[in-house]
Amino acid sequence: MLKLLKTTSENADFVRLIAELDADLNSRYGALQAQYDAYNRMEIIDTLIVAYVDNQPAGCGCFKKLDDTTVEIKRMFVKPTHRGRGIAIRILTELEAWAKSLDYDATQLETGIKQTEAIGLYGKLGYTMIDNYGQYAGNENSVCMRKKL
Picture 1: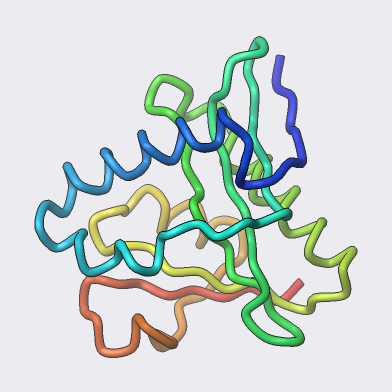
Picture 2: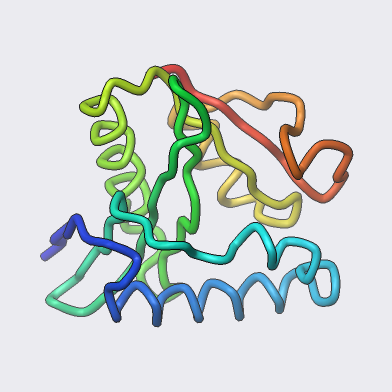
C-alpha cells in the first residue's frame, strides 16, 4: 500500500533516501556529479513528500520557490526496488497539486542527460524541454524542463 507523507527536509527517511539518490547519481556521472553538489545541498524545505510502501520509505521529492510564479522540483527519487510502480508519478503529481494550492503557476526542473527514464517520465507528464536556466545554463550534461500548472 502506497502512502504519501508531506513533511520537511529534516525527516530521517528523506535523509536516507537522498543518500541513496546521491550514490545513484555518483555511479552514473562519476566525477561530473561534483559540479552539482552545491546545488543539491538541502536547506530546510517544508514542501517535501516521502512515499512509503508498506510503511517503508520508497521515494521522495520536494519543491522550492524559484520565483513568484514558479517552483523548482528537486530531489526526485524512487528506490530501484520500487521503480515501475507509478510511485514517481504519484509523488510528482502531488507536488504539482501542492504548488498549485500555494498559487504557483508552473514547475521547472533539471535532470541529467543520463537519466533517460526521468526525462521520459517528465515528458509523459507534460513537461517540455526549455533552455537551461540559472546555474545549469551552458551545462551540456543538464536537461531542463517546465510545466504550466
